[in-house]
Figure (cartoon, rainbow, N blue to C red):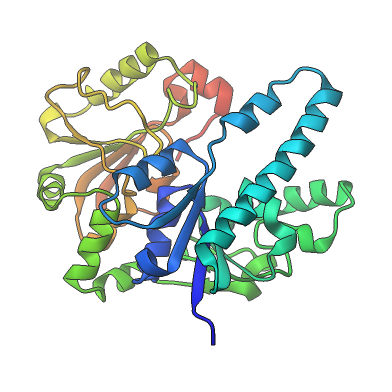
Length: 331
């Protein structure tokens, strides 16, 4: 019987955390395929060597910038053929002689390109979008209008998706309930040995000293990639943070950068503890670290927090640009 190699399509730090928590042998039996700069930073700074296939998005972005509609359509078609050949060659090179199992987010670019070659897929939770019934309804409506085949459905709806791994953030939509397996990740963490826990810390480049720093703070502020997503300028972002931080003693704050965050703000807030590890916030709950206050502008990570006395959710009303771009998001 052939040994198994797992090909994993994940971009978010949160999904990566869930996957490596379920697979204690991830550094030996998995190949991670990704395209995002944030994911690339995680793998580049990881202290655990894993097999990866990095597909930079710059070439595709160049294609989308072609103004002529006909030329852009031809360029997209050529790029997809090129990308499919590149992915197949890279995966074959790293899985030669192994039986392949596929995991991750079926809605990412890479599994979409390879979908005809994939027989069976396991979806890993990527956050609240996996629980939004209205998202499924809107997606199905768009899908039907394009007259595609059922096997090409994404978001876990394709017959090729045999299992959907969720953490049970809230009620599971009926449309995916039969495929869903709920995993108690807090319990899973408690059952891990100290060596296994340290391996997860090492994967995200987290130091043992970081845990002590975290546990000393009363307030944790969960930032968002406002600059990276070009929602606000650097100056606007800093001014907004300064306005929010006036509600607390700065010495009490742990500034947790978003996993996709590039700017560290160490010069702007030299007295504040800046936590730069890409490890998701959810790990703190698994570790049993409790805070007096968790503060954020509109991070969905706070919606299921159980390890804080109170949540300060400032919402998009704190800045007119955020309100105009995202609408009124409030807790």
